[in-house]
Image (cartoon, rainbow, N blue to C red; front, side, top):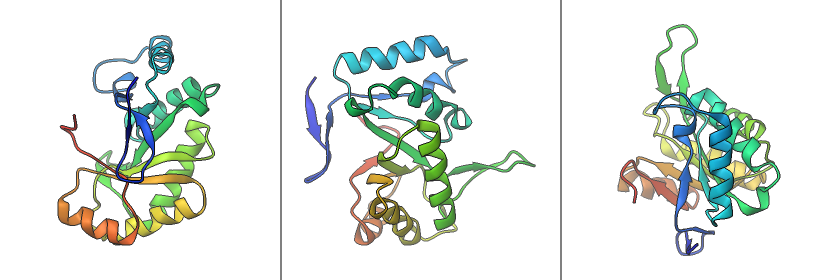
Length: 179
């Protein structure tokens, strides 16, 4: 499998990654045995970049990925995202990029994934109530604490990316139409 470097000084990952969202939501009911076999086969073929999020299946996808990589963690570059929250009363989804949520979401993701360190931690969407600088500062704290290795942003403008990168280096940007 061909490898690529993320950014100028970033990590090296497989050129093809495996997005795991569909294993827990969006495309019908997931089938655990098939999903675990798919992840194992991807790793066997040299796919090292796995992508999930706390919002996928309300945490179920992270738990699934965690089970799949338990014995193969050293082979995986693990990316997950945070930011979406569901109101327990209304069920309405919003975005929370507050520093408090950054820390809470990271702890919950690490627990579900069964890992000490997340390789790439993305903000899933920008919180309109929290300046991006505050969110990224809190994400940078996770790197300094050894809980996260690299930071990413999803669905951001060039201006937001510049502002974020001025606070802490952003390794990756994900967009819906990413090739």
